[in-house]
Amino acid sequence: MADIQELEKLVVQVRRDILRQVHRVNSGHPGGSLGCAEFFVALYNELMDHNPDFKMDGKGEDLFFLSNGHISPVFYSVLARAGYFPVEELNTFRHIDSRLQGHPTTHEGLPGIRVASGSLGQGISVAIGAAQAKTLNEDDHIVYALCGDGELQEGQNWEAIMYAPANKIDNLIVTVDLNGQQIDGATENVLPLGNLKAKFEAFGWDVMEIEEGNNLEAVIKGMKEAKSRLGNNKPVLVLLHTVMGNGIDFMMHTHAWHGKAPNDEQLETALEQNPETLGDY
Image (tube, rainbow, N blue to C red; front, side, top):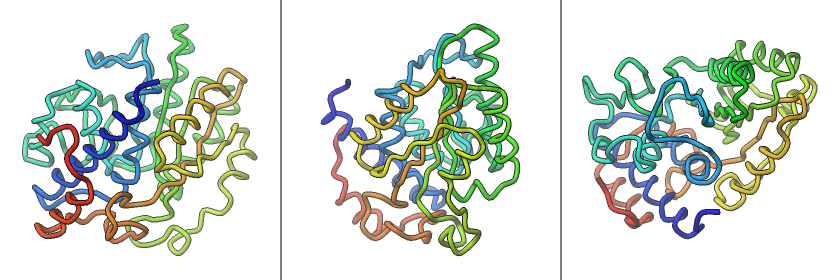
């Protein structure tokens, strides 16, 4: 296992990256990005067998697909700090002709991005296809996907959720960012999701929960448990309980920062709460 203290430093630096990307262009989605910092750091620094010498086919390595693509700031930060592209390129976030668009795209050839995820509700389907391809290619690596809880209100998800167990896809881990918030308010008020654990289990998934989704050690332990459950003719579903805006006191527990950039004063306050650890870009 990587040094947990070093990974904690990376989490803090990723928060700074998120804030500075969104602030620079006064545009983007800091809330969900901040809530998933621990997950992404764990994924790319402890869990996945991946190669920054990027090849689109992904043969011989684990794959990750981001379905809720609006949380691109955290994805870009972690990819850059894992060596996929220069950290300084984070300065170009959401600029015209940048490879770092608000939602990840593939046409600019950004290393680490295998699918465009501007439209919600498609990531599980894509991940299932990749998982089946690995089986056909006799590649024993794992496919990961992350989606938002509000995103599960999209119908295509439920076709995919039926399909995976029916086809005994067991090299796939889907994680749901369960923060209870979406762009228009709490998921409970917009369109309640009900008991997701019971629903996924009814469809035939092996379901587990990580109650402390913003505790790095808990995330690593929980995701390793998820990996251990693969290979049993079922896909694995992880309900990751997170806090939107985590790490910034005035952003936490509210949908208000789903897609809102901090102003100069707010940025300064947020950065003071997360002192620089590994160097800003």
